[in-house]
Length: 456
Image (cartoon, rainbow, N blue to C red; front, side):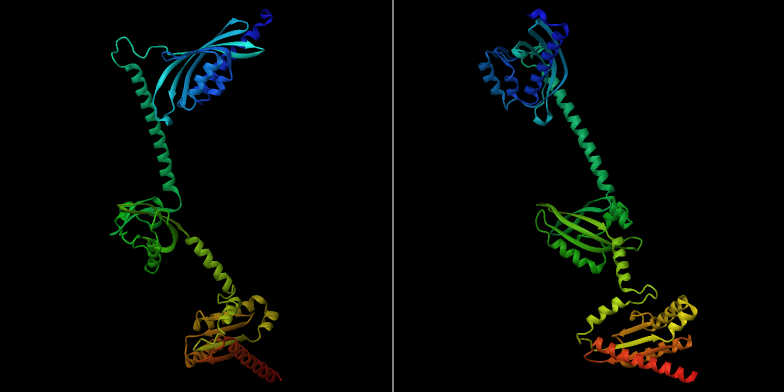
C-alpha cells in the first residue's frame, strides 16, 4: 500500500507537515490558541518541552498540559523561520524548524530567543495527526564562561528592548510631526489658556492665530491675555466673551461665543468660537478655544439682507422693507411720525415715447434727490412711488425738508405729486400712509387738471 504513493504525493505530505508545524507555532506563540494544537494531536502523541522535566505522552495528558498554557503565553512576534521535512515512511513525516521568537512590545515584556521545534506527523485515514513535539533552544542559557547569570541571553533581550524603544520613539515622532502639521495648517485658530485666580495666561496657539491677527509669535505672547482674550477684541464684544468663559467650571464644560477682533491692519474680523475646559488641577483650568473666521459668511448674510430690503434700481429701501415697517408701526407707540408720499408725474408717457431706459433714469434721479435730504428713510414702493418715513424730525423741519425735495425736483425738471402726514402722538403708520396717499392723489389730480386746462 505504501509503495503506491507517487513522488508528488510524498512531497505534498512533507509540505503539509511543514505547514502544520508552522501553524502550530503561530497559534501557540502568537494567538495562544491551544485548542488549535490539541485538535491535531494523535492519541499516541509524545511531548518534550524546553524546560527541565517537561514531558508527557498520550493525547489526554498532553492536552491537559497545553490547556494550562491558555491565557498565559504572552503574545509574540515570529521572524526568520526555517523549516525542513523528511519522509520517514510514506505515512510518516518528520519536520524540524527554528525561528526567532520575540515578545510583542504591547505585552510590556522584552524577551527574544531562538527557538527550535521538531514534530512528527503520521497519516491516519488520510488525515495528518501530530504524534511527536519536541521544543528546545539551540544553545543553553548559560555559556561556559558565564558564572551565575545567563549574560548572553540577557544581553540579547536588552538589545531587543532597545530596538523596541527606538521603534516606538520613531512612531511617536512621526505621529507628533503629523499632529503638529495638522495643528498648524487647519484653517481655524486653536489656542490654550491657563485660567487661575490671578487671571488667564496664554499657553499655546497655532499659526492660524498669527495669520488672522497679522502678528508674529513674540508679538502675540506680548499681548495681555489676563481676561481670557487679547486687546484685539472689540470692546463692545468683550463682555459676551467674558460671560462665556465665566460659565466654564469643570472638565468637559463648553460654551460658544461669537465676537469681533481688529487685526494689526485695522480690518475687523468676525469670529465664532467654542471654549472648552480640557483639564483642571491645582495649577488652574486649561481652556481650549477653537475659533473660525466667519467674516465672509457675515458679508454674505449682510448682502442677502441688503438684497432682501434694497431696491435694485435706486438703492433705497424696497416694498418688502416698507411692509415690515408698516407692520411694526401700527402700535401707536411712536411720539412723532412724519410720512411723505411722492409720485412722479408723466412717467408712463416718458416710457411710451422715449423708452424705459429713460424712464428708469428719471426714477433714479428722483430717488437721489429724496435720499440726499432723507438719507436712510426712503422706500420705493412702486414703479414711480416713493415714501419717506421720518421718526426723528419735528413737524417744521420735516415739512421744510419735503419742500426742499420738491424744489430740487423742480430745478431738475422733474414733476412730482406729494402728500404729507404728520402726527406727534398716537402715531399709526397705516392711517398716516392712507392720509398721505389721499393727499398725494389730490396733488396729482391737480397737476393733470392744470395741464388739461393749459392744453385746452
